[in-house]
Image (tube, helix red, strand yellow):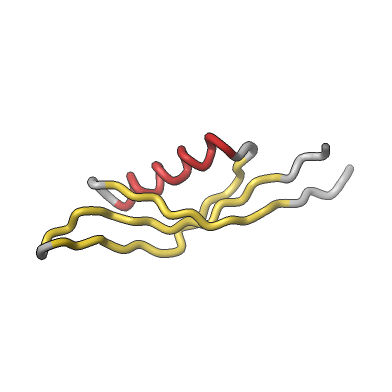
Length: 70
């Protein structure tokens, strides 16, 4: 049995609806170019505000994916 190695990156997702949607958008987009995603952890959440109104929810995530043997 060989040891597994994982890479961890940070991504930020956005949504006009919610932080949950922002997180889902980030994972869905990352999965288009990364394979074998394993774990996601919410690192922070913030709001973009314009003229006193919330215009975007942002969620910063760490994502891990498994390195594959070449």
